[in-house]
Image (cartoon, rainbow, N blue to C red; front, side):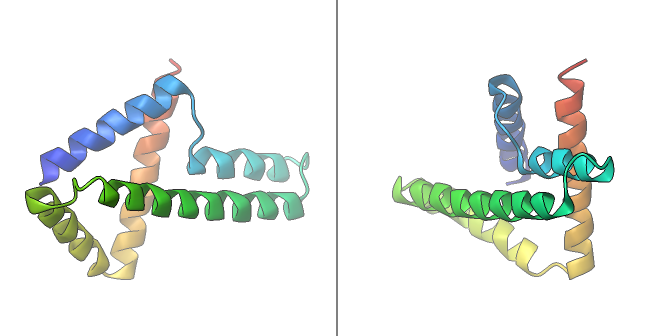
Length: 116
């Protein structure tokens, strides 16, 4: 299961970088930097955070539902998805949070390295 998931993440990140679409991480980093430098009021940054979070949440639900409706989430693939989700749901909160932090660091490094 691990190598299949890893390969899909690599392909997905490559498509994000090549197509130039926005990531949630960047949509929260830029306003934060603007507010820290005094160029953007914190109230607007908070509104951007909420809108970006809700849009990402809704998009992930719609994408997940669309994937389910394709019928691809059955058999071995469905079992792998369920197994991976079960592992994530049973992790201690601190461990899950730290994994997310390191995942975002890797995504940022990958995106930044594409500009070099």
